[in-house]
Length: 433
Image (tube, rainbow, N blue to C red; front, side, top):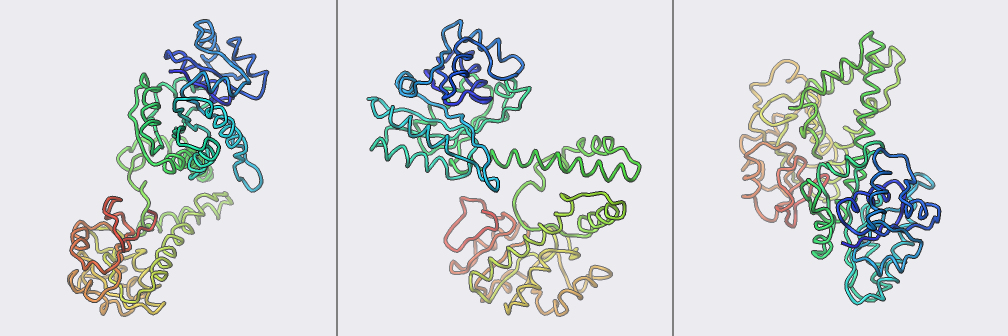
């Protein structure tokens, strides 16, 4: 393939070198003539292990050239990659000026081509940016001859070439079969599965990946601080934590849904935060966890109230499926809030029976829902009878079929992901989807 790459910074230079190594003809484009001169001579503009040799080899094989001439680069290629910077400006907002400028330049140049052109955006941008790029380009070309895709990069400085060659997946955010086919061909030699999604999903994934990495660093450091204050080696603690790939380092708890609860997580988090305060150890990330958990309960209540319904069936009262533990259950807090707002609530949970509740479990529900026995019903049919809305708080298996059989006019608020996207219909609402 003949590929033009706009932006010869870290991502652009590494991508150019790797694509040329894989046999593609690459034209590097940058407004900075110094970068262009370096690339054209086979010299790296950045420090990155292995990059210099790849550039030398690419230039020697006449597979890498560089220019400041946008039009010439577009006319000589059939696919253009945009890898320009999106630096933060006021309040952290990303500056997309370079993205818009390059899109305009590519569109003007591509207007002179007789064949279609593919543009692949690799700069980190907020969801919705590719759609704006498409609208901008179409307004200049006056037709739909340019096909766009978003292809996030996951290159780390110091291991960029290895990361290019061994990504966890290759994400293609596009609604264009032409653009998808071009990206697949471009990465044909990369051993990674392709994941094709809507552009906005791909754009969001890039932000989420980096935020997750930042959260991991912050979490480990806070645990290290608390551990040291206890006289414990935080490295030893975290070495044990990461060995658990069934729960700790796994997809478990990594799906949006309702808040956490139960007898363990709230209690133990509260205890650790107490000791951190007592030892003057700052743990802002851990301190934020109870707050963000409460926000999720508030969000669920707000979604119910915005629907303007008053007759509500709540499916699930315990903090998770298969247990009758009501302690710190977010479902209990949600029901309490809805009753306080004047809603009529009926509750069904196959694992919760009034007669079996005892001890702290009984005390908790009596203090939060003093008349809860009048809210519990023995089966789902009674819960749904007359209900305008069913709120699903956890993924008890039978709830899926119960809701499929429910009256079509009844709305559903899914807090647990009982239904996937393909099950969405009018009247279905998700808390984070």
